[in-house]
Image 1 (cartoon, one colour):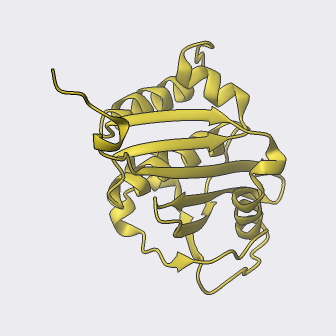
Image 2 (spheres, one colour):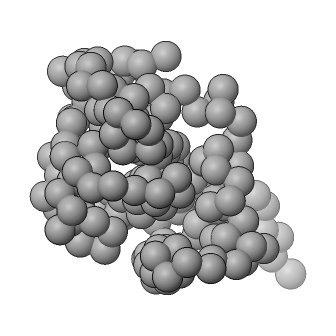
Image 3 (cartoon, helix red, strand yellow):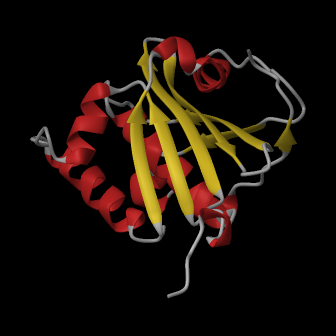
Length: 177
């Protein structure tokens, strides 16, 4: 009988996604950081040009981050968020009650199928500083780096029409935190 060792199994190249969506009086935005298995960060600061509830920017950030990781070639994605509600709704522990939340959940379930593996994990806000900082940069129009891509999403581009092929990205070193 042949023995199989762990050394013989191919290494899974995991991509990481950290995102933060926020809705404040100053505006709505998202910070998204997609990290390749080799440690290269793709940073996005996105301003939403539409009114949003507290949770919509979190869902928008998750969906956009998943799409961007998929477009970058990720097959195995580990996503981190500090939004307990979004995580629990995606896991199925909590139910989405509003129609918009149900639509977001449906899109996420569909998009999860494009990855061989997908994991969504809750982290404390203090461990999500870079994505939080990027989110705030868009709301207050602070430029952090020439290596960060800034984008505004119009009301017509909300949710499922956030086509990552329209977004250009730049590789980034540590620019925010």
